[in-house]
Image (cartoon, rainbow, N blue to C red; front, side, top):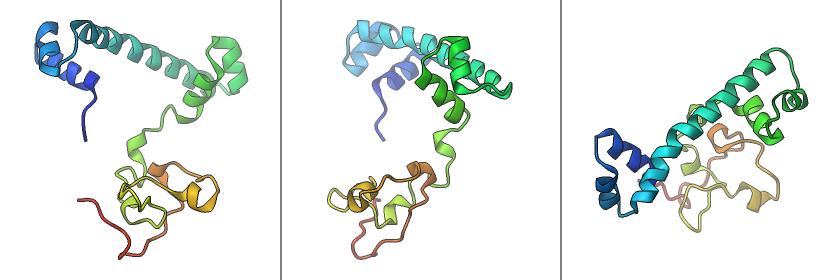
Length: 147
């Protein structure tokens, strides 16, 4: 899997490279490097702070609307942390998409592991791919397993 630019910037920065060196290695401007390094701590701290506040108020029995009124956070932000804040995407039974590789709902045209459940059934999939509950084994002759 290809790394994102910001991840590469963080790694090179951790290795002690200067902004100029990082920019030359990746092929971006020094301003872009500065942007990634400046926003790393700022965004992570804000997210963690909001998550902790929402979880604390949730533990006190507050509803989403009450938390929005108390904190002034956006309702979608509160809802996200209220329901999904403590769940990590890589913890589901299908987190590595191993089921997707043999599923009959798999996108056969592109050979990818993207789910075509909606397009084939015209129903929303009732789950995230990481916790798939609609898996059905496909025809082995039609399924191309990725290597």
